[in-house]
Image (cartoon, rainbow, N blue to C red; front, side, top):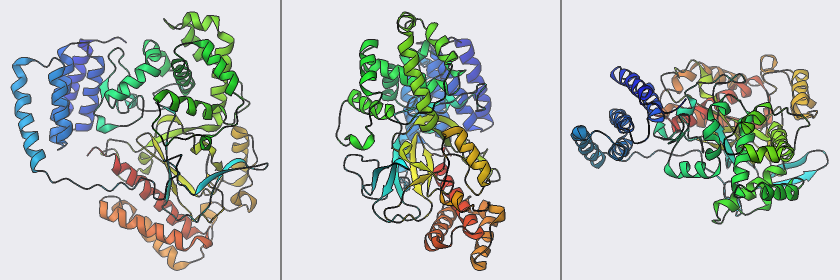
Length: 520
């Protein structure tokens, strides 16, 4: 689909209909689509930005409203209507002057001293290697429930779209930055060439154009149909761009590093280096990660590259290497890439009765530190995705010298041991002997009650769960109470009452993350 002012007009009118009904989230989505379809240097760009500024004004996001007024003025907004923007600008500036700045606590930041070379990882975490566990992460100090031990930024991430492989809103690509996955309250700019990519800032747009979108843009419709394989293609494109489109330089790099054993702890990410050097360090770390033995057919990748207007010749001349490189990336992705989940940005959809709306799939990413963490069916951390970053939050007390554990599939509360182990072996080729598997812990329904007083509280907090999610103060208080109970009673785990409280704790944590990026 090419840029079309006719389509852009229709989408803007749909947005206007939502605006009149005060359905502002849907209005913003339509205005974003309208921006993406607007032809270059057409007034449709200015009109969509102006209408977006009106939405932000109505929901009292005056800085965003002012930002869109500027964008409208720069993008061919009709001169005869500029007085409308001028009046709105005056009101925004007045409200901004008189508005008291709200302090919003950022819970999702490192709560411990940071590693000097890895400023996104707590200094108490270190990597160890053993025959049984391979590379794994341990803590050199006790960790408490609620501690945030890492805020991992992806080497590469990508928003997912509706395909034969996954069910997701077709409008997901108009809600997330195509580079960093931020939602930015839907305040994004479109690609100037295609209709299917938006960016949270000019910086992200320029980065994307330099490292991958220049290649993706001509074949974006085919890539969107290809499901998760577009991650391997994107990393191939980034790698190619890193070496100035020289396939020979990329070959040499690959041969030198495909069997390297370096991990993220071997590099220094604390100093300001060039973007290229940072990406090369991350690519080296990526190539050292474990791989599955699965052989991919690469049908989508082969078709996309073979039909590519600028890469066709290079692909035909270097098929064997490119296939090997992308095959490696796909095999690495099997064991190491993570789904990115988020709350639905439309808060009207989250009615507090469907808690699944707190964890909807929106993308996929390569998180190089998180990939070093081993699996347990009774994990002691929880992954919380927040605008493209992966926050690792302690959910059970972790004692000094203990291993950090993630959960790759369903935990012991949800499925019996035999089923869990079959799935893990099928996907990751290992037999799990975690505490839950070794002791064959029962599922949640089968657990016994050890403390009737705590059980009454677990039932009470579950009964009041919906009410607790409605206001910030109730949410914070309930979260803290659950956190303290889990910390103080960790030796009684697992019991029905503690596992129920842990479930509530996780829900409160996800709602805190949802509030952090909430539009309204």
